[in-house]
Length: 491
Image (tube, rainbow, N blue to C red):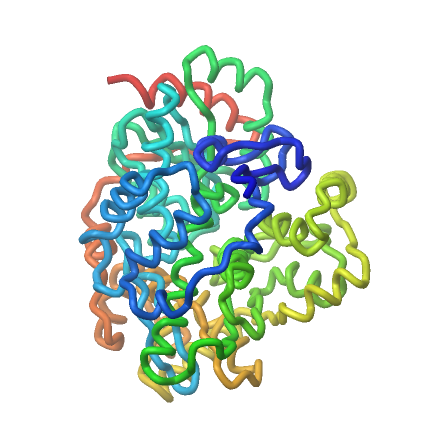
């Protein structure tokens, strides 16, 4: 079996899994994919008998073949020992007639923790074989930034610069990033939206002057977004874990199909589920749940992906995205691994702001993917209704996935809960008919309603000093990265 990753835009660009994790994005602008992914088959009987860590090892060893058994087991142990507040890592809870997969019990109370506690370990191991340093450049719509900063804080030979859209994240998300400690961490508020920051980061990876300067300092530029395969692969595990739960509770039998509803903006979380499906997870349908920026709903309904539309700021900011980067990987697999086709789509998106896929390909995607979107008013109604009926409190992102799951008519559906409601306390309280503008007071009010206590990492934010105050223009991102190359690695 060929054990090399290739670019979505050129099958001749081949790298090992360690190289793919270190590079993050291919130098042709494509994302790394493994052509043989659909030939891997995970043993469901084993999955249902093993721990989270054992399942993580079983899945990762298939997709990261040039890591040794010792390296992988060490990475998994370091990532998942004492870093999550519950032993299951990603527990499942029944809320009315829907099973909710809780992904927010990590150090920053968001689903990104599942991968971003592991990625620094994987990257450190890969770096040891190159004698290089790495500077991570990451655009965030809210949650990835803090999870990446937390994961990479003071990791040897790695620096990290995070860019978030100024005044377009929640107060808690802002404070999580702005109070981040670590001599190797840089945080910048960018005037613009997430797509502006993400597009500029992608440009910087391909910038000749930037790469020459990095090379002169023996620094590799890379990413911690889900465009990095090392971010994506760990997320496959919790899909199998939710299946394990349903089997072990006697709710389904091994081989029965399950559907998933996934709130997503960048298409990374649902793509991890699709990877699980390719590896043998029995899936009926994936429901792609969007907010008012429903670019994915429109694509899955019509076959045309268009970013030529107004950007809408919502109460689910982590999904406020118009360019869903990971969709490129789905196009690769659904087109029969046609890299020329994917490249043309991405070129059209860049030049015209849109592309259209052939009807037969859309039919193939629609056989597996459903979709739906929920606006802010409807999101608040869902939070209110679910609380009144079940006493469970959902955050605004989770509520969107839950709503789409409710409307799906599936017999067995798992809805992904991607963040703690405490991260969005003001909006959650508002949905529950209470008013409070101060995020920390709102958290305290919410704790009288929520079954879970305020996570420690959020509770302490109020008293932490603001360490990162820079607000920059998009055009200044290159200058601050050049500066960060020197500052992050000064002892």
